[in-house]
Image (cartoon, rainbow, N blue to C red):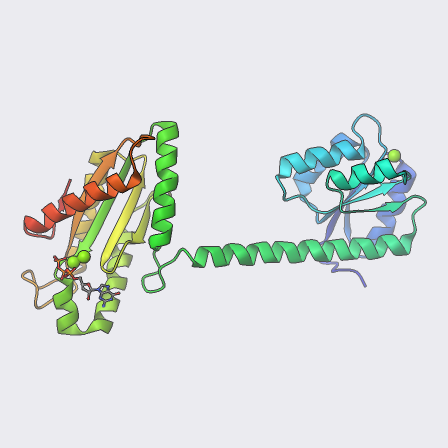
Length: 308
Ligand code: GH3
Ligand code: MG
Ligand code: MG
Ligand code: MG
């Protein structure tokens, strides 16, 4: 039974037109889609054009042989190469060792035993697809560990990771980095008055409102702590960060969530803004400290505002 005729694509590279034709006919009858390459260079180009599920690679071809094709594909795909099945007349120990060392996952010998070929092709494609699914699932899981389950914005773990990453980029590329820390005003009173569940809903609303205020793909809103959100703004000047901070303060105020025990009777936030040109001998925590100091100022000067 073929793996699945819907989409499995096999790249067949062989300089012998007769063998190539036989392979193609056989594999197409098995339900696969086949792309033919008559030499190594063509195989390299076609690989990136079609991104096949499997490569059937002749070992001996003029100019760029199968070993070299595999080596270059490994380099260019950085470990994401589709399985390569080598078809070879060479069965000496050195050739076999060399094939496996450069990342060929299996081989069949000429003259071709068609039943063996069919089974190997089937198994390799199934394995490859499972690996892709696993990789995708792992990626999704990895993403989940970076999201705050209550507010759906990035969590503290992601904050730490992203700040470090962008700090490093700032050092290398001499880009300034801004950070805004937002804290909900009188939030303890909010919980005391409306209850903890309403408090949670308020956090969700504020997170959503803050997220709507940022537009660059590199900017991220994170839940830094209980009722504190930190916004990382890579490659952003202090002026840029203050513009965004004002937008954040205004947006939450205009959202108009009732807060009867607060002086303004609505939910508001205070923000502290900081900006640095990252240096190898400073620490990202210095930026957090500066933003925190500014936040303290914003609270001291009456809340519902930002300070830099
Ligand atoms: P200020 O204006 O100075 O920021 O006053 P505040 O009351 O907001 O500050 P404080 O730090 O005293 O209180 C923060 C409150 O946030 C206390 C805590 O109960 C609440 N909080 C923290 N995390 C959560 C959460 O996940 N859900 C809810 N409902 N409340 C939370
Ligand atoms: Mg050949
Ligand atoms: Mg707080
Ligand atoms: Mg607060």
